[in-house]
Length: 122
Image (cartoon, rainbow, N blue to C red; front, side, top):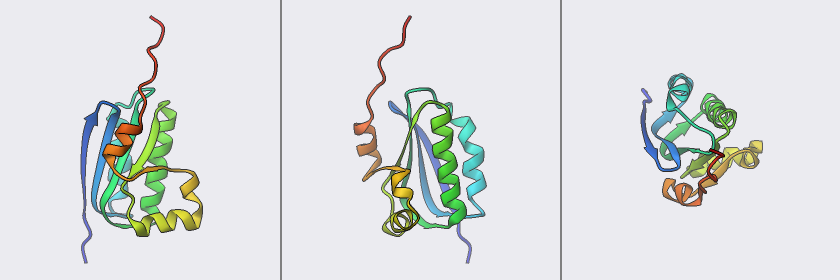
């Protein structure tokens, strides 16, 4: 059985949004890891990863989600997972990742919850 991952990125007022469709596994996770530096994430922005169409996620997929979170934090940005499928959310709870990841029910809810940082000194 071939599992594929489709990755779509776009920029929102809050920052980059990555939408994943299909399987996030040891075959596809490196693609996400390579994508992260190209996002142009800036301090105060929010990186959202929408998992609403994710059909499978193995331990390598979870590791790349942690890497994406770490990438956002290193850029002084926030990180949110949106529309986490029940099975993936269950794994997060079992291993304690529900305390690591901020989660919103939809990408739209994540954008609505984001607050624009105050302007810096000029």
